[in-house]
Image 1: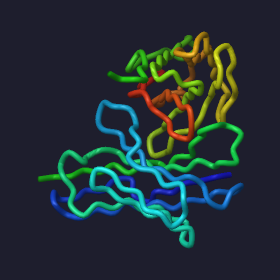
Image 2: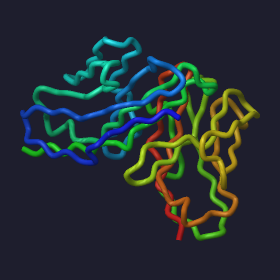
Image 3: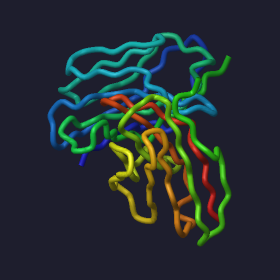
Image 4: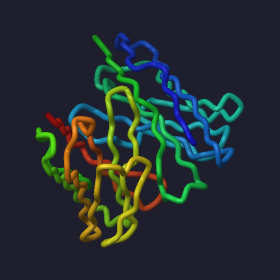
Length: 117
Length: 110
């Protein structure tokens, strides 16, 4: 089946430093799935941060960027300068357009980002 | 105004007891989903529904039932709660490939 791998369970970064959260994927029934980053702030539900549905394209939102790389099957999340308010849990996810369940998402295990002043 | 709400936000249940988790959406979406998340794991789909009065099994339906009495409401039912069902449960609604999530319910079964 489909899978999404986030290798870092937790990342701690100093404010104003750069960030990269790794994500790789495997989609068994379709070559080019839709890719997403969701974020969960403390006490809130998951929110869509950005999505990319076309291989080779880049998505961006709130200073974060992620590029859909079909060669390396990766969708790493990056930010040039993080803020304390970015502290949250970040989830990489894919949707397989061939699935019978409309909108069904396969999630990575999440990466908790802690930004300190 | 939160478009997907869940109740309760946290619950402690006893093994063998019945637990009902509720979800309400104001997005006017046809699709609704229940996921569970265990520490160190991604969200996994339990049940979903694409129309009122109908529910479908997701990837991990064993031990759970679902109910969709209206477009707005979707419940998850644990008839006989077990220790292994301790987790955080998320509800979501969708009308496309983008989902909108509730804040989650933390369930602890003792």
